[in-house]
Image (cartoon, rainbow, N blue to C red; front, side):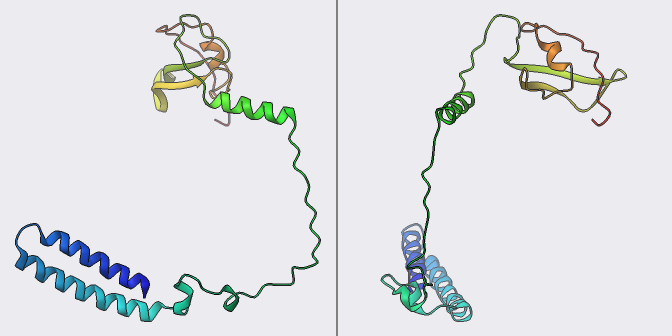
Length: 173
């Protein structure tokens, strides 16, 4: 019932706000019709789907009327103290640092561990293949994301340098 009254109040307030804009006679009729239709629909829905008594939806309900607790007194519970080692703390700190690295452009050759933005075109027998190219891909060297030999071929390259890598796809690729 409380939800129903809240909905009717919200509709009424919306109607009052709309009534201040434009022609009032047309809007009043619309508001009255929609409020009546919503009231009838809400009443039908409420009577059909109501499963719990009204008290279940009110503040200050007594849960003892609805819930029966099992026998919990006398149950032995062993609480173990969580142990956190220095190694665990160091691993967590490192993972946070790794996920929040500052990226800055450097003027040197690519080395293992670098994050590089690459443009590549994959070809088989001289013909580009589907989903084998990108104009901008962020690759961490050493992540083994690409086929064997690809990342090794990028190591040593400098910005805007291009290179052809003649690599063989694995059988199960």
